[in-house]
View 1 (cartoon, rainbow, N blue to C red):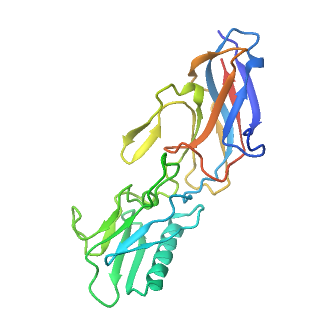
View 2 (spheres, one colour; view 1 turned 30 degrees about the vertical axis):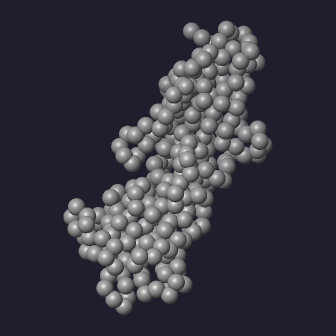
View 3 (cartoon, rainbow, N blue to C red; view 1 turned 120 degrees about the vertical axis):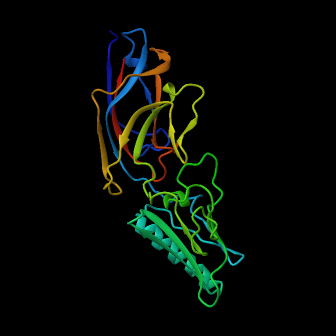
Length: 280
């Protein structure tokens, strides 16, 4: 049986000494007494949950109504379901008032069906024949949820024109999924040396995605967690994850990354986190 090596440390990034979501460990001095290290597992971790679900580059949706576009900017931060729906209603209607229109739009959540329904009307005339809400064109790779995904509409435009499979009243649109402000309730710790050369995002059930390569810990986020809560992880029976190359006393660098399910990066602000790593 290979010798097991325990590394326990509060972790920091090289470029940001106080906080970090990418951690490089040099274990070369730890493996000098054995020929190689070929497996890794995380048996414990403590990570503050500070995931902003509205982030820069993905916070400017456009409402197209009455043939005219109205773009808003949602302040970056973490929002509950009620908060994001109220914010969208307030910001879009302020934009419509500023443009001297007679349009009103409302975002409502209906618990009985677990869906968001968006309603657009013209207060002085007929309900608009169609309206759309479009995401800001996201960067590549996407490092956060699209706003329409947070309110259950997937990645495409929110379309309200009465042409749904079960036609809705003109001027309304019902989400295809549940309100999901956390956007997949997992934190991930990945390891560059374990992910292989062809790491990709793979679809499980569109529009849900997951990272299939390099995951060394998948940590459940409680449903009632508050922003800033420290999420503990303890798994003495964690599986060993094979490294793509053996490490020794001359090449003992291992890089870990903190991630959210689906998204490669954890998002701002960066967080200070700790973990206990076991090598074999």
